[in-house]
Length: 259
Image (tube, rainbow, N blue to C red; front, side, top):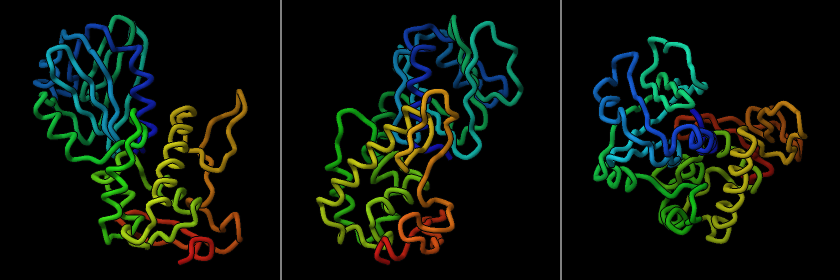
């Protein structure tokens, strides 16, 4: 499932393609025909990322809400584009570009009221402007759940996925099983700041890079991590421990993270 940096990068890349332009919307697959008709012919006024969700705003007040999930994909092409494949849930065409979305976990129209309720369900986005960590930190400090669980809870913080969770806990030497209420507030402030910085790098390079090795110009951009899916800790060379928490695989170093 794409983590928050991927969704923010998708929004960033699509804005010049769609925003301010009148959109022809169709559902080649047929499963979203009614929703596509709602926004067909309208001007796209904004594209926003909220955690792992994409929100396309239209002049009539409706929003197209997309959550890619595990199987969803976004394909971008310039005009004139080839005919859509039958698996395309929604196609959005401007005079210059075509966006095809396949296999999303969620593809729906939200009214203004729906959107207000939707926003209330989620914690602050790490990459949002302005930066607002206080609400997330307050929720963590009130919880007895493990910090590794809380970081994956989108009602606490929006946008962190499994790789970033593993990496930030290791980078900060935090015990993943420590209760949220036991993690000092200044540590959580630093966690927010460091995680925000890592995800901003992710948006820039469209890849997860947590080990400080930024690509040189012209290099292929691939994930560069410290401990996720690795066998040995790069600091102490101890074997990396593996467990399940929040139904996802967590990697950690027992020695460096005080487990």
